[in-house]
Image (cartoon, rainbow, N blue to C red):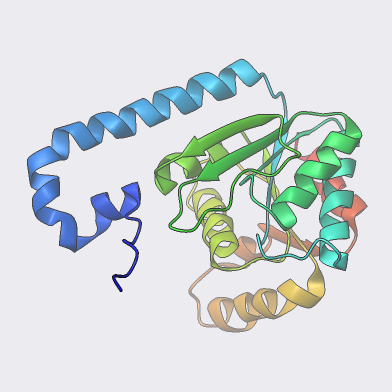
Length: 229
């Protein structure tokens, strides 16, 4: 019995060495696809007229009946009550929770989805939905249309997005976005490692650690976002 054909993503066709020959033959067309996805994304986000928006990162694997999910709903709702639109990756789990809270607060709820080898789909609490083929285009949209970032407990994707934003702020490539880690029992080990390893060994500066705030208090996280307006 033959195995089902594995889905090859658009990112893999661009980045994987196995597709090098295909890239040589179709490089110009690929670049035009990048351009088209940027144009479509910018046009849709501009038309959405979000105003001040906060991007909430977090795991797609967060169970709906968990305290982490409730935390995400509370965060999304209180961001909305503070006058922010809410942007997430549009998936299930923590992303769904933040979108749900935004809907409860009556503000715009955005989901920026991504093509993956396994289907996730956009959650039902999204008003404005965009689906991207390329991770790097999606990351630009997160950064372009957010004025701050809140990270709920998450995995590699959350880490990737969190440190992307953190690096851009640290290097001065963007303005000083507020960044909040929500959930000290989850983020505490990482935060201490930054202080006890990176900082002590001189890999980062003391002010770099201050770019992150960590809290268990959703109100404190929202206030951190509000004060940076």
